[in-house]
Length: 92
Image (tube, rainbow, N blue to C red; front, side):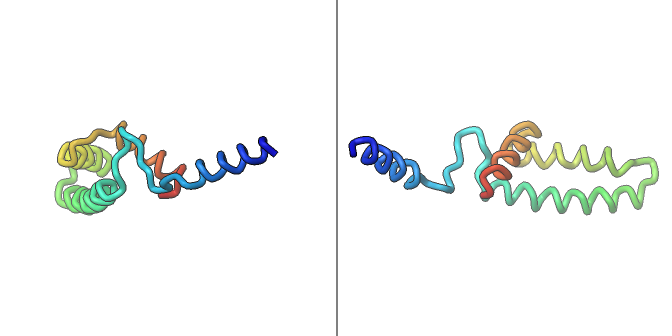
């Protein structure tokens, strides 16, 4: 009976946690949403730049604009990738 009680208490303890918890070092969902919106805008801008300047490549323009977006949001590519992987795994 004691083992069953402990199992029930453990189940209650672990099931009552905050399912929207985001650990330190992970970009918060509202900020990720802002970064995604800026990346969409940056992609459109990169396409427009390449249309007007044939010396540029879409890949280099996207990379350049993405780095600028990360700087605006005070983050970097590795933190973004880590946060994206976390959110994919937890389905936030």
